[in-house]
Image (cartoon, rainbow, N blue to C red; front, side):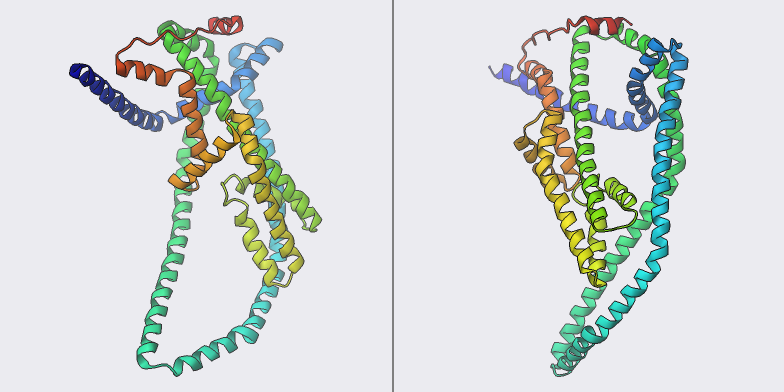
Length: 388
């Protein structure tokens, strides 16, 4: 009995060691082979279009891959160009009206300072002069400490922004290199896709193939479902913003809605980065209607996200709304804002591993039993695709 538990303990250690080593290998190989991993993903996305060109246009596969890459690049470039053009027009409009708004805001702040802040300041000075020297010293020390903390916070914030811009600019050549190698890798991988798959089918055991196919199908369904759900949620928010800005009579509402749509992909802090300073500025310059409208519009976005996000996520990734809420909350509590994204994805991955029998295989290995053979996929279409 003791020998049995000893073997179980050894196999548990082997599983833990294998998981740690596997994680390190994935991390380092991922950094080293990043362009080729991205190329494989791009080739996987391109394959349906390439197959259609081969079937209906009768192109050779190499020409079909090249045509698909050119078409998709042209489509994305056109969309990005149109968006950038609209955004530039919006910024051009803002650059024309911002000086007048800045002047109004400056005049408003001067009036407020003269009518409210200056008398309050003079009253504080009078009260300060009546205090004992020790009390005045304590207040001065506290004020100095608070001033230093505020100064350090602002300095750290500005320094982080500068460092981020520096890293972004410094990383542009590396990004361009990765992009070029990824496109080249995507071309060659997609061109020889069926040959690569046939070689893998010959060399990889059937049991491993079935596990990989099951994991791939689950990840494809869940991850694409998650991305689709996030796209739906942010798109609905952008439509609400666009309609709300039109009601408020804001010019270039489409540009602003597109900017908010892009920023809204940041969980929970996206739209508020635009709405909060805008609403504060509107209230401070006396535009109460605009400030109230922006506040109500942001409130509608928050309510809309909270109401539809669990439902859309559950319908697209296959987990219940309650479990979606639990994963969102646990992820947020454990690792902060990014956990709102990592939490559901981690649960999806664990769910796929459970459904495909990975955890069962690990358990059978630990207890020293032989795992039952996984069910094979007898779908004729799948088999025919594998033979191509």
